[in-house]
Length: 398
Image 1 (cartoon, rainbow, N blue to C red):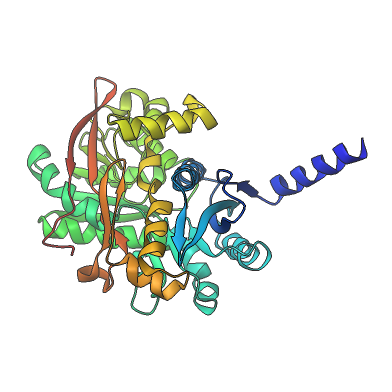
Image 2: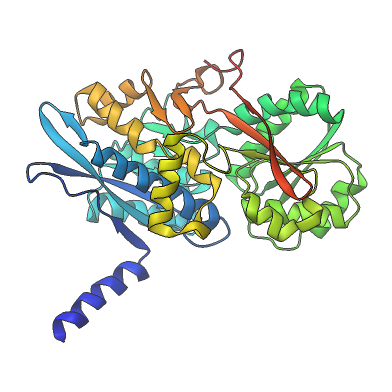
């Protein structure tokens, strides 16, 4: 009985501290575990991203392990993933990073969100930690001064510059209002959307910010609607708030085009916005339903662990993070962070949505952002319909 109580106590401690450990597949006794820490939002306003994304990386790490892990100088390694909840609060992210590095001895990290990632930069640089982050605010994260910091997600710079030319023709766009959360991530999204809009000759009527987690966007949207833009772009807004903006803007009489521009969850858009979602455009990181054998395998593995109801398409952009890291390690033939970083800038790797690589030196001065294809959907007759998949523009990115 005492043993059972002790086991339960340990389990409760892990849950209460926001730590979830995902072990890889059982390897040979001489295979060493390398810990990969995911500092993501498992609760709070952006939890729909954090939960799904952390599960994607976990599945990918398990796939790497099943295939034999990775080898450095004849020694075999596998990933052990530890997930921490920072609630999308920068101070909590710093606490989690401290725990991951010094208590749990994680070798590599991934931090979710621009503001949390920025808060962790001093600690990461001081300890020479290689990170593959799921974050916005790229211009402050990916710099020559941060040689070990990579971004593993589609960039909003790539998505807006690919999609705005299409919308300009399809919807006859001449003017735009851009909406973003009032934090470092949102401000970087505003800069990117404005630059892409001006590139297409759109008149930017307003740049509007809201407090992340807001439920009533009516005051902000009243102003937006009064300006009568041809396009309302939600930029770096989280999935729940994007759907609320869609609903509330339409309720206020907005008739123009709507772009839910950053990782919306179609089922959530339908549930929250309902009929008001009709004709809204959704920018996704891959197909809503798996098509290829590789995509179906990921879907089946996901469902086996977490169930069908938990699945959403935001899995795709993060599935491949562990694969890229493993290939970078093997290419570098080293566990040294600087050597791995150098290797990552030169490799390509296979994912269920295609062959990926890091690039972006023309914009950020370093090749450390995933160049990821953008898939555009539109809600038609109540259902999301794929419009097209667009590659990153080669004239803007290397």
